[in-house]
Image 1: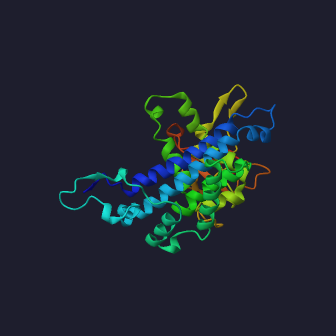
Image 2: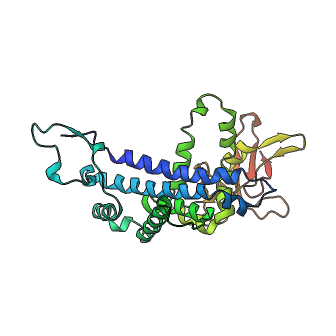
Amino acid sequence: MIKDIPNSSEYQNVGIECLLQAYDNICNVDNALTPETPRNKIWNYNQIVLRTSLVLIHQAIEGLLKSEICKKSPLLLIDRKRSDWKTLPNSGDESFSDFNTIGGDDLLKTFYACVNLKEIHDDFPTHYEDIRIKRNKIVHGLGTENLAPEYVLKLILNSFTYLLGKDSFWDSVLNKFYEHPGFDHDDSHVEWQDINQYMRMEYLRAFLGKGELKNHFSVNITAREYLCPFCTEKAEEITTEGTLRPDSKWAFLNPNEPTSTDMSCIICQTDFGVIREDCIKEDCKGNVKYLLEDEDLGDEEIWVCLTCWYEETKK
């Protein structure tokens, strides 16, 4: 009997973890940049980070392919003659982990035999082959091709989107982050990261651009963007010079139509209602307002413009 047979979610979790680790590896280097040293020199120095990240991406893709195959049967992954399986009566038991599993071309062909072709992006085979070739060169020391961080970041995003669909990258980032044990212990560093979650997306926009990012979200992020009231209030800071708020705009009308009154923030993944009314602040052309909730205002209401954050009090 074959024991300890894995399930689809186990392979998927490993695949996602590998992609997120590759992403974090790159972010950590960029987050440690200083004004004194040019970024290109830092990345020339840290080529090993990009190469190990690419190896992780390859490992992740294999895990995600195996995850889909497992939905049909994990036994399809075993790379051994059936005649050598210990499955007959009195033949003893063998753990699934003792078997070699298929890889490379066999893995890809088995994957496509188990899925609906319409659900897989047309560019995936080329994407996988490109990564496989570069990974083999890295592992076997056959080549010193320099990698760019932007290129590896695109590989990570495409791997998520091609195999798990749009929104899967950011969903996975948030799911991993909010599992952090620091939330149970008032960890100030984790709380700071939570407040500044929008900076992760600003980082990707700065180096990849919205034109690339739009391929990985179901919401049209190239449409007119707005302030999210929840992210903005969470990140606001009281100073001696007044209240400082980030000007990061990742909320969008959903759908993006002139009369829409529903919005979605891709950072905090909150859906909320708005009204369409012109902002009264001079020089602001915004026409989307949100009602700030405050129990101490009595009969008064504060409506904030999600273009400029001008607050208007109404009775």
